[in-house]
Amino acid sequence: MERHRAAQSLGREEVFADYRLRVAGVIRDYGMHDREQAPADSRERHDPAPR
Image (cartoon, rainbow, N blue to C red):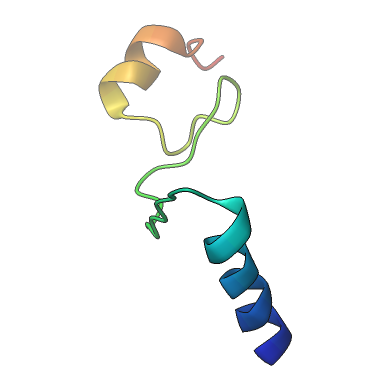
């Protein structure tokens, strides 16, 4: 961990003028073909009808 903190210090002092870090949780994860978590109205509109 000390090597990591030393690298962070170097970055703060010599590399970056500024930065922002956000840690967040995923609310929904879907794509064009993997639609299980897409909102229902989106699935109704864009997904093919089951056969």
